[in-house]
Image 1 (cartoon, rainbow, N blue to C red):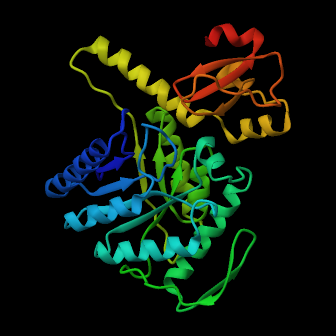
Image 2 (cartoon, rainbow, N blue to C red; image 1 turned 30 degrees about the vertical axis):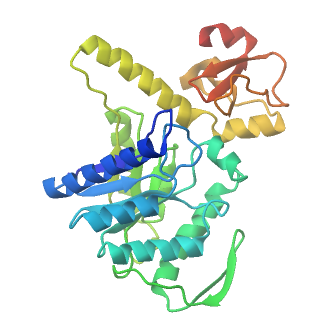
Length: 335
């Protein structure tokens, strides 16, 4: 068992230059102490536009600062968004190789494809193609790191033959991971020989099932890189308070906020909004959950209704950034 730190870098309003600097400095002090205490990893997310929740939009800079201030702790991208509208694959290869050099070979490269419509919509990325673009990126990155020259012609990006520099310090290349948040992604990780980097809202029993399936499938994988990275990292949520009642109430509120952030909308719901297709039934969540329309918006009190949402659907705010549309007969239970 290894232990690490996982940073979103949350900064509450009101924002000031001094407050943001203080929060970043506090994070760096924590990482420096963690290195001295023997923690194994520090991970940093890549998020954009997620007000207050995460101000970590340039993780490569934060992780470079972590590497410079420490001696042994591993630094990890958790994750780099592998969607062309967010990051060009050549730049990913160059930046990660540079960070690996500066850290003395302590880098882990987590990959993923973004989880919120706030971010995907902000970059005008098509949610229907992000899995395919991610797959292209993770198959190209090891080759860009290892080969003297590289060229590529794909569906989502292309380049003529060039020498991509610098090359990583680690040979043949840094360990590669993929974010495992949506159902089935652990299978994608295993089939490609990638480490499973999980952010879990589920209980331990469900996590154990996913890890067992991951372990089983990775034994017969076809790795995208030069080696199989059979590792599992999981971030679980825990809120502690000296008073049980207060801890339970605040913990539930925090959990609901996180669920709203990561579950609204799903890619299926985006398709529902875009094309007006009737949503599929999801028995484990009940008919009201399965029948909702949802979209992300700003902090403004008035959130515009998507044009394809039926008139029979009513709007209900969830947290401070989202509104969800439920069938009228279900709306009362979600007020």
